[in-house]
Every structure is written in C-alpha cells, then in structure tokens.
Image (cartoon, rainbow, N blue to C red; front, side, top):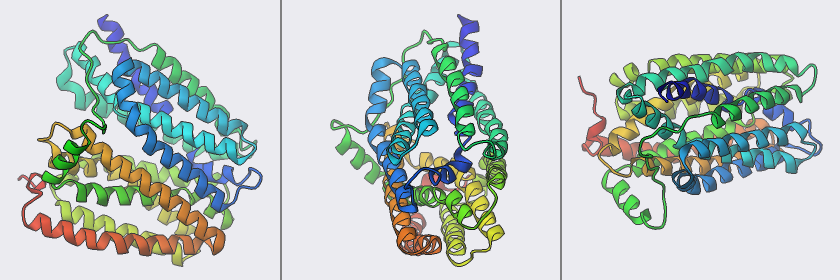
Length: 402
C-alpha cells in the first residue's frame, strides 16, 4: 500500500505535465485556419470558455466531495481528452467552442481536487509536513517539461496545424491512464468547500469582515484582462506576418522567466508590500497594453507579450500569498479564493468578447489600446482605495515581517 501511495507522487506529476496545453502558443493562429473564424469569433470562443469556467467552478467541488477526489481527477482528464479531440477534428466554429468549454470543465474539476488528493496521499505516507516541498517539486516539473514541447510545437505546424493537437492527444491519454492508476489513500477525504446557497451569505459576510473583496476584485480584473489580451497574441502575430515557428520560442521564453520568478516568489514577497505589488502590476500592465496599442513593430510586440506572459504566471503565487495572508483565519479559505477565480472568469469573458469586437470593427491596435485605457480607468481608483485601506491597517496580515 505504501509503495502504491508513493507512486501517486510521480503519477500526479504526469497529470500536471499533461494538464499544460502544449499547443497554446499556436492555438489562436489555429483558430484562424478554420473557415469563417474572425477576431470577433475568437472573442466568442474565449467568451464561451470563460463563462463555462465560471459555471463549472460551482458544482465541481461538490462533485469531487461526493464521488471522491480521484474520480474527479479522472473526469478532469476525460474532459481534457474530449477537448483536444474537438480541437483536433474542428472544421467549424462549433467544434472550437466545444473544445473551449470542455477545456474549462477539465480545469474546474482539477482545481481543488488535485491538491486535496495529494495532501491525503502525503498524510497516508505520514509525510504531511512535506506537502509544500513535494508539491513545489512536482509543480516545477509539471511547469518546466511542457515548455520544451511548447518551443518545438510550432515547428510541427509546417507539417500540419493538426500535428500539435495529435501529440497533445497522446499526452492526454497518458494523463488519463495516470489518473486511473492512482491509489486512493486510506485516510478521511478532505472536504472542498465551494460557494453554495447554504453558505453564500456567510461567505459574503466573512469576505467583507476581512476586507478581502477589494483585493480579489483587483486581482480578478488583472487576471481576466490578461487572459483576454493573451487570447489574441497569435492572431496579432499572424497579422504582423511573424513566422509561426517563432511563436513557441517567444512563448517558451516567457514561461521560462515565469518559472524563474516563481522560484523566488517567497523571497520577493518578503521585500515588497501589498500596495507596492499592486502598483507595480497596474503600471507595468497598463504600459504593456498601451505599447501593444500604439506600436506595431513586430519585435516590440513579441517582447511585450513575452513580458506579459512572464509576469502573468510568475507573479501568481505572490498574489495568492497575499490573498491567503488576508483570509488565513477564515474557515472559508477555499471558497473565498474561488470568488477571485470567478471574478477572473467573468472579466475574461467580457474582455475577450470586447477585444474581438473592437478588432473586428477597427483594428488589433485599437483593441489593445482600449483595453489598456479601460484597465487603468477601473483599477487606478480601486488601487487608491486599497492603498488607503492598507495605510489604515485593515490588511495588517500582509505586512512585511522582518
């Protein structure tokens, strides 16, 4: 039994590797190869995926608690496999939308269930104290190995745009087999809380008491806007006639820098405050959106997207750390964090559709320019509000401890 539980660790690493979409660098470009797909249609596809993510976040935790975390992970892998099949055989917009929907469903069923299952596994091995170290190591593997595939995938486009999806299908089958072969630990199953009718009012009161929602809203708007802008990365590079073979290299460079920032997340957080962290994001992302909106030189555009990619993922654990600092005394930690995720999904849906609509009516540059202006107009007053509240000491749990 102990050996089987030990094997869960490397099997879960395989699942994390399979979770990363190796075709993401060329996905937007692939959309444009399907008949009748335009930037506006891409916005609709991204809208469908984001709204699905919002909807599936609600019942996925409940389902995971009822059927077991292992089976939630299996369902997640099945949905991911189905998503890849839809992308692979797509010859119309409907298939692309279904691919996006099943992809979002897969992510929703994996969130929460994966970490809970691995925590149970380590408890079964009497290694609960090693959770951060073990998960950090396998998360790093799950993040790093797919970068290699992402860099080389665009070269396969010279054979066919379908080739990267065919490789992803093989990886998804491996991920599904890894999930099926997991051993269920003989320990009590951990409950995954979610927002439901019974605790919704309690969650709202708790979030308000902890002054959490302003921070969740700020982070959600950043994450959702970045998703919307990132969805048009490959189509814009096609418009600028950047060779497709470079897409994976650009994407891989961004992810490599993200991995580097992630590795030093703990140290970075020790030397910055909540307000300086949010100020940096407000300034850097507004600047990069304006660069995309005002400059059409291809290498500057590519560099802007690399930096966006690096900071979007590289700063994610610092942001999560600040949120956990604020809500660490709450029994609704997982539920409160899910509110931030749902804000992210809603903003991503609106942002994706809005950018696609503007691109269709005007140009790519106007789409990014308006995003930057709206982004700053909404977040600057919110930042001032958070800064005043921080100065008043309401986020005292996030203060730097020397």
